[in-house]
Structure formats: structure tokens, C-alpha cells
Image (cartoon, rainbow, N blue to C red):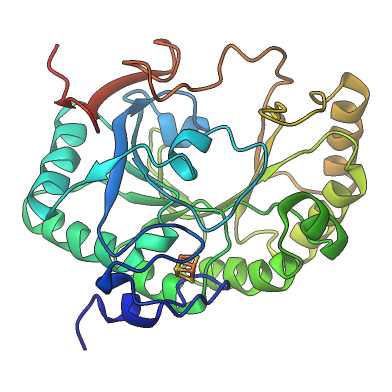
Length: 312
Ligand code: SF4
């Protein structure tokens, strides 16, 4: 079977659109079988074991199978920013990130392109890529996708958005998200416990990210309890507090909610992981139409969809 066979009746995520993406058809993720990228660069705003001293080598992939209404990357997840890259250009991007000092290759929203990424990463390894590869996904992916990615991925970095069907339906429009994401996270944990080197840089394992939503404290509490019962000692938890209502009404997390979450973490006995400081304002929000979508403190762009390689 060709490595791209999964695109011919796509079930790479639980939407199971069954469209033939190799013929140019598109499912909910809106992407064909051609890999499109938006930007690549060194990112210093990830968790410390990912950013390290050199920055995480982020590669932003166009399209997404989820439609989170407040997505901070909406310009690329559903706005279509990006262009097709072939294997040679992908390899060149990976090697440029490695030569630029990246600690890892961090694939942002990769699930709908798993077969292509697996092929291109194998070729990148053959071309001299030595960095660990991180799978920075929504968690809404099929067992088949985890299996394909598992051949090339070292670090699993999935979201866990909610485990409540009502929240999944009301906020994310996918009632079945909880039943889909649980087995995915457990399968990722089966690849092995988190490993860091002598400089504290993550080399392997699972880090589950949860974005705390203002006013949805019960959902977060449920996640902490589930994590404590299922993944303690097998994974790290990263609690993100940067929710900003992009394109939707709402507010950011407040201090009372933040402290409530810190208390629950202690109650649940979760010690392995990270909690983001409380964020206020929206200065950090990316704008992918700018030469550097992030603040210059947070990132250095090495490649862009519209200009190609950025030379200093
Ligand atoms: S990745 Fe998911 S959303 Fe995209 S076509 Fe395949 S099943 Fe549909």
C-alpha cells in the first residue's frame, strides 16, 4: 500500500469524511493531499523543555480538522494562509531550523497531513535531521493517524480540550470529542514516559496541553481528575491560561479562576508539568500577515509561505 493511501478515503480524524483527497477533494479540514505550510521559525514561548535555549523549531501547517471558534491561528487553520511544499523544500526547512539552533521540530496542527509528514520526515532524517520531532496536535485524530505518526514522532503534544460532551458540543461543535480524544491520549502515553536530557530538554514522551476556558471550571476540574487517574507518572500536564476571545464575545481568565485551578492541581496530586502565568491583554496574539507573526521576543521566522526563506 502506498504511504499516501489513507488520503483516498480519509479517516485521519474522527470526522471520517471518506473523501478522496488525492483527487483534490476536501473534507472538513479543507485540505487536499498536498502539504501546505504557513511559516517556520524558532519559537521561544513554548514550555521550557521544548523552547530550551535555542527555541522550538515550529512548522505551522495549513488547515485543521477542528473549528474552534476562538482559534488564535485562525488565519492558517481555516483562513487558508500557506502554500504547497514538496519533500525537498520540507527537508530544507527542517535542516535550516536545525542549523539555526532549534531544539526540536515542532509540527503545529499536523494530524490531517500525517501520511505526507511521515514520508517527508523520514527523508529529512536521511538528509541529516537529528532533532526530536514533536506532534503538536488538537488530539482529535484517529488511531490510524497516531500509528502513522508514531513511526517518526518522539514528543507527543496533544490538546485535551474537554471531557464533557455538552462543552464539546456547545463550544467546539463536536459532541464526540471526549470519546475520541481519550484513547488517543492513552495510545500516545504507551510510546513511553517523558525523557529529558541533562539540560532539561524534552527528548521523548507525552505532554498533554489543556487551555483553561473562563467560566468552564467544571470542565477543567474533570480534566485534572482524569489526568490524575490515567496519566500520572506517564505524562506531563501543561495548563495554558492564555485564552483570549478572538472573534467571539467573552473575557480572559481571572485571578480567582486561576487560583482555583492551582488549588485543584494540588488536590489531585499532579506535580509533573507546567502552569502558564496568568496572561492579560492580547499583544502576544499572532498575525500571520506580518513578516514576524509573533512578537520578536517570542520568535524568529526562517521561512514564510509568501517569501520562502528569510535571510538575515
Ligand atoms: S483529516 Fe479529518 S476532516 Fe480532513 S478529510 Fe480527513 S477525516 Fe475529514
